[in-house]
Image 1: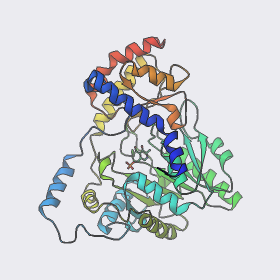
Image 2: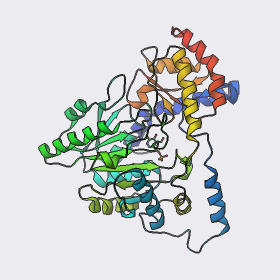
Image 3: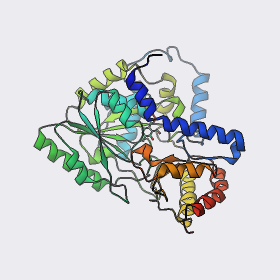
Image 4: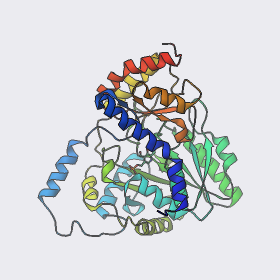
Length: 397
Ligand code: PLP
């Protein structure tokens, strides 16, 4: 079968994901699913809020003629306005529905934004550790990913490293807060400092640099922390997000992009993005789910339950001697690997039926990721296995 060489290479690059999945399946078959502790996938085990089911039933019981037809490529006005109203409630600006496009998840939104912005060869800065798909998405639109580190030990923005990486070819930087995989939230002052830096570089280089704020975890923040609104911090900000995590609807593929009303050339950008949404073949976000989320903008899954799992897992890991930054949001932990080779550590963990993802997959070897969006009982049951693993790799508890 003659598939494209490039796709073949991409599959090979990400083959470790498939390998891990297969190993997980083998372990489940051998030991029984309840005895395997799978912390690999960010697929929330929680159900959507009750309001979702109520709205779904109400829609099914009162079908309206035309409700499954094509619509404007940007989505239903009613849905875009509801999203705009929600964003306005979170920041100090008035966002209008005209600055919102409904998309097939945050992944769809990222592809739409990159297609809209990038000329071939233009650079997009991504920060380690990063969401695995960024490199593929940038490549989809003939861009070049430029990988820049975050600050060691805190995973916060390293503005000096970002400044050094910016060239005349830099078109965008993707920031992800709360972060997958670290759980770190970037404070408003840091984002404002990034805005000043980008403005300085834009003047120097006579260019435009956009901040693509990938924020599907924005509602999952703990300890009373509010994730700063990007539009209040960065003028050239484009938010991409979804209801995959906050309403636990990843399979429904519903998200949106929104541009800062104060962004330079915002109308031209929106026109381009609506076109990109169409020609990428998305055409529009799914009709039924758009109608559903219209009235659910202020709803969310039980955030306290995630916070409880974070506290439980973080406390146990610290007790066992792991070195880990306490996540402020999201549903991942990103501890340092106790042995230098993170892939070897993940393999060792499998001997105790613990499934993890090596930091290498996020562009940062020497760490590993735990996804804790699973039942609390699995986390609790896994603790004896973690104890044995910690002892084997020489951690002191
Ligand atoms: N961005 C980040 C950082 C993610 O973790 C994910 C999914 O896990 C996505 C984007 C894609 O989200 P969606 O399911 O809405 O496409």
